[in-house]
Image (spheres, one colour):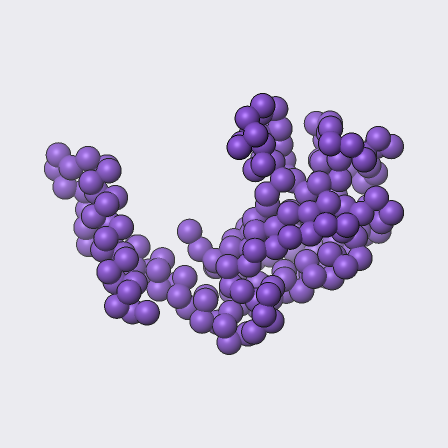
Length: 197
């Protein structure tokens, strides 16, 4: 729970993974953010839908933010180590789609980090991707509207505070099932959220 950026994409076959990694590494080092470099060269057969068990590209982690995965499978599609572990060998088409879905929660990092990540993704999209899709819960990707982004951050913060308050105010009753408990919590959070919005 918390404001999140969801993204997916395919690295352009004519772009340089080495240059891409260099730019991501420079950004992380400039801000002194923890980062990791994975494989730096795609295999020569990286244009089909199959993939090996390696991760290519890089990632970095801004303060109070989830890791920003700019990493790929050998078929040049965005993914990350945990997605490869959980969904890489799945034969279920519904599960398989999660292999290529990435997200980064920026809720606790704040508006400035969120904006930075969005601007970085826009820059990388133009230079390195043949396909790139983003769903920004802050709506900044689509609008570049800072006021709207601030309002969305505030709304998510209120929702989290309401949920925290619900957990403290409404503990599990003796003999109550988890299903009943969560229905009661859900009602409390929704009622409070509507009153504050």
